[in-house]
Length: 421
Length: 158
Image (tube, rainbow over all chains, first blue to last red; front, side):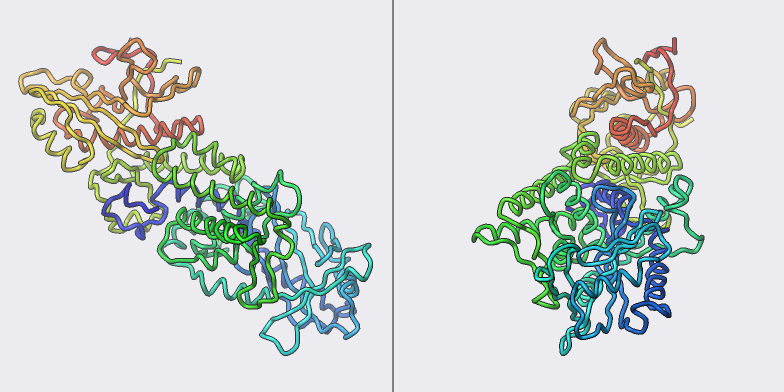
């Protein structure tokens, strides 16, 4: 989709959020992503955990080789945790020079010993990591790893040892999260035309939220806002869709890293946000459809390390993958219908609430409605020749030479009329 | 004084600024335009009925104003809403949906027959429809304005 039907003659690159569906999806993404305040804190927390694990008298003192972000944090696509609107899971890898005889359980236990008294709300030993929980809703999963000698940079093994299970079930799992994040980031550079508009919307939202929740959203004045590519923001939306879709589904749910990998493959410059969401959704759906057609389960591998399987725990069966593919097709079809102008916002809202979460969608539509009202009242808006309302994404765009096809100026007027209840 | 814009000039300026709104009826100084507008999400078909007053007529924005109605989709009233079951409309018949949009204060100089509809009525309709879509979705009318408890197109507030 593009904006040309609403703004014929207008280059969509002028304002990537000129289309209201793109504007609304951007608001939804902003409302589900790690808020800038916590984003700014996360870097410091990584450093603090690393320093604590490496402190004098720590069981890991002098053993840590690398400590780096992985998963969504490494590609800046962190959303609130599945089923919540205000908790955030971040991931880090702690690569250490483990003694040769270290077992998976031994490595995880040693890491737990090193972190168990870390000053925070709670420290929990998991099957593959140790989770540090903060009072503000942030969780950091620290995954211990060891480097695989003679392989590409950062090619590693992580440890799997579910507490209480026999050693025979414990194992090492190959991975190269660092190389994957580098691959993704290289394929999805942030484009100025989108990044600037999205940052402006983040800034507006942050201003509104600072007063609403100072713990989560409090920001020092000069805190930089993260710059994001359209691919990353679309990925956040597809991950959110996956989260809501899977809430009432038994078993495991489609892994984020599979969606991230498909998003990286599907990356294409110049597309709008809604186009990119649809493209990513269909990319995954078609990969599943292709596998299902030949009786296989979808198999997605780390493009930087074939042994690193992103789908080793999901899907568990054909029904599971087919169900997700059907949901992705329906998502794409619905977004296309909204783009064509076939659906009123009121009806689109109900549909979007079921797919991205009721509170987030309602809040995002309220945000957009109030922004439109403010902009029209200030006569900061414009019109397209097809009768579209143009609400600029950023003040810089207002003052720029926006080639709107309609040169009709915005004039003040007073809605009147009779009130009949 | 400039005097009211002739209907021919109104038709010309409408065609230039809003080509999708076509004249579907013309009789002397009366013209009817119909076509699509898509302010936000939904494409609406609107009809604008306007009779350009003659120079010798007493100009009265309330009586002379263009009548804008939404043909498709039907507007959705919300009974009991504090803004009214349909905000900022004139009732022109007995039916719940016999309404035309009310987008300026006739007691001010916001609109007069000297002004082009292309620069007033149509963009204000876009504004109104955007507010309407937001109101239907959120319950909040962000288009501003004033209400009168009883109003007729041809006469004063009661």
